[in-house]
Length: 507
Image 1 (cartoon, rainbow, N blue to C red):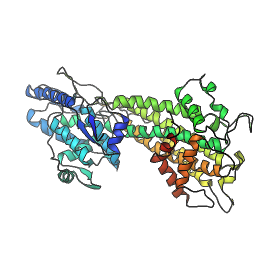
Image 2 (tube, one colour):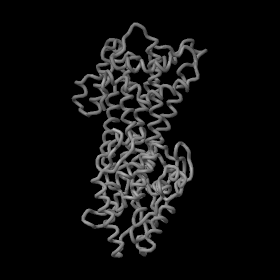
Image 3 (cartoon, rainbow, N blue to C red):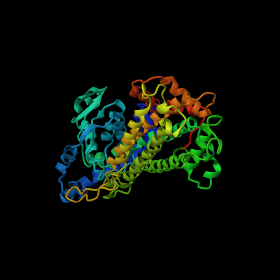
Image 4 (tube, helix red, strand yellow):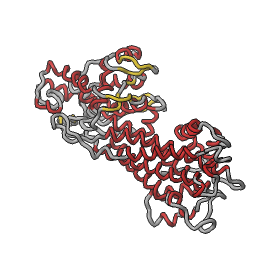
């Protein structure tokens, strides 16, 4: 599959990743083009008949009651983009920008926005040829859509702003010229159609969600390795416990761990070494499972959003133009806040397992998992660094969606802050990945202090991947370099791919 067909209805997480990370090109379907043309005809008829319609022949926001003459309607759309392009902060990454462009294309393909084929094809050509607008990450309230960042997306289409092309940032006009894409003049409603939507928050959140699914799998691998390293009790994962509290995430986690450690002689049975384990080992199904249930909830909402019409006004198939509020990001704001909270809990419990691995008072292993302690500090400060990330996550997990600041002279008097929620969830995920990498590296170190045991079917594969990149630490090394290696094998999915050749991990 070298081309992703876009029709406004069939986009999913896997297709998004193929476009944003693998560089696949997109193509609008014939059926979608018919709908786009019909929608455009309705807008042109409105202008011809000089009807008063929001965003077509009127101003925007509080200026909705200001009529605009036909001769000024084109200037209206250009002015909209120029005035709204006032974002700030670091630039969104290339993959997020590609996600923004893809999601906006998909929404416009539904044929409810009144955009012209020429304008939409310009955006498609930019995506396919790698002209990536420079979009600052801050400046959206997440209602009336992601107005500021999406305006930055549009600027290069007009020969303005900046864009990245072939790895270099340059003026938007130059990037378009180098790519051989003509710039355009916006006409009736097109500026509004391009920027009135939730595509920035949804792109950030959808890509984070894709990675969060991997984090759920990695968390079970990490917990299984720690369970073996600490000679934990497998009885707590017995299906009979979880069937009487039948949350799907809890059941799948318990099942995953049992299959990952199948055949292991490290794990123990109830009463063999101890009667009970601490919660961070015993309650893995309940904690990891709750996160999985949350992630699946978010996935359900994201799949709706990426295939929805989120601009305003809506041009119906019957020829009506209706002003509403589909641009409001509240569904995504709540979902991405929930995702951030759920991910933060994965790091919370992982860091506590890390503490159990390195704290000699809580196990029968050498202090801080190192020989010649005192001369060497071993994994002492890895927990320190992990704890700082966990603490940071607690601050980031404060929900953005509970805030609202009125804007546009109180016409837009409730906003979602959904883009902030999405950005925070992404940052939380990066922290979680590092904490899990630290736990996995420490668990492998701990396992090497024990002799005469056999790892489980899945954990053996995970251990092998770690040891291909990271040696047992005999004496202190520059630790961040080792942790970076471990983080990378989580990020590039090599640990998941190796394990899933033997054991399928379900969420």
